[in-house]
Length: 130
Image 1 (cartoon, rainbow, N blue to C red):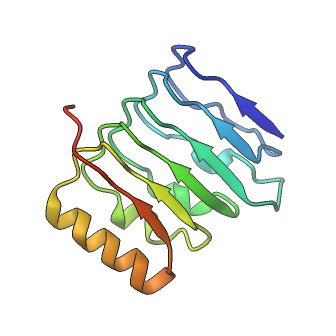
Image 2: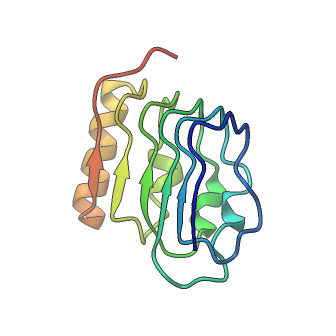
């Protein structure tokens, strides 16, 4: 199941979508990912979630409960760090965090951790003004 709701002024992510596989909620007003663990629980397929260009400030530790999350796009948000929350999501193959205000040391350590331990791709860029 796929759901795309971009440019809709949505303020929070939907809850309890057990069959979702591909979710794109980019360009909205989302400021947190509370309830992300309820998405896709009934579907064993790889998941791709896109939350680009929102106002997300943190990633909840419950993200580790998302079943088979393979791609996570969080470009152009307000994230200052992400390593601790994402390191436990062993199914992640690609994390996009471009245009977030992540400091240089956190950025370097996150890239090293993911590349060395899990052979994952991480996309970063310049910090965003949040």
